[in-house]
Amino acid sequence: MKKLSLLLVLALMLFSFAGCSKGEEPAVAGEAKTLTGTAKGFGGDVTVTVTVNGDDITKVEAVGDSETQGIGSNAIEQLPELIAEADSTEVDAITGATVTSNAIKEAVNNALAEK
Image 1 (cartoon, rainbow, N blue to C red):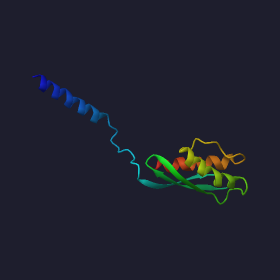
Image 2: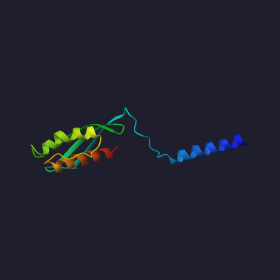
Image 3: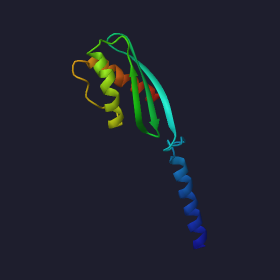
Image 4: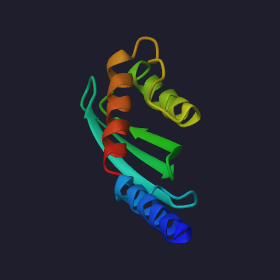
């Protein structure tokens, strides 16, 4: 009788754990994906290509041909590497290029929302 009760309790626990699962499979390391996002910058659209491996941001590339040379272009050159290093868009904007920096971060977030 004790064994039957123990088996019943274990079965109920198993079903309760299954009921708590989210139903989506977690990202698996080793599965690199390339995502694209766009946001409005100072001079026009800024487009980013984000490479992720599981939940890790491994590479970010930004293109904003209409951004101001020497200002917005600085953000396009510098910010993607900072985002990849931080594995997050929670990084400081590039001084003097706040609008372009925010556009890059927004575009990365838009790309990540596709996952």
